[in-house]
Amino acid sequence: MTQSPEKIRSWLDAHRDEELRIWKLEDGQENRARIHLEDVQLVQHHDTDDYLSDQALLLKGRGTVETPAGEALLPGQTFEISLTDQWFSAADEHSLQLSTERGSYRIERVER
Image (cartoon, rainbow, N blue to C red; front, side, top):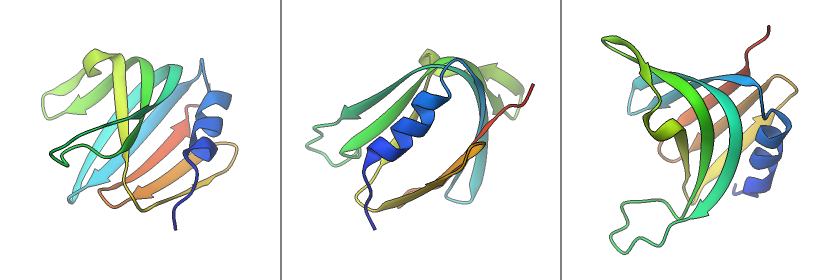
C-alpha cells in the first residue's frame, strides 16, 4: 500500500534539532547511524537508468555511521531514504518505522 511521503516528513519535521538513531536493514545487512536532524528534504529523481528511486527523503545534519572500523562521519552530512513504488510507514511519538521494497528503517529519538 503506497502512502504519502508527507506522513514521514511530518514526523521528521516534528523532530528537527533532535538526535535520532537510525537502523537500516537491507539485503540482510544492518547499518546504524546517528544524526542531529537539521533539515528534511523530499527530492524527485529523474533517472533514465532506473538506478535511483523516483523519490527520496534526505535527512540533513551532523552525524555518524557505524563501520567495521568504528564510527565515521556521515557522508555529506546526509542520510538518504529511497522511497520505492511500494512502501509502508507507522509512527508514534518516539519512533518511525518504514518498510520499502529495498529495505526497512527504524528511526528513534535519542532520549536525553
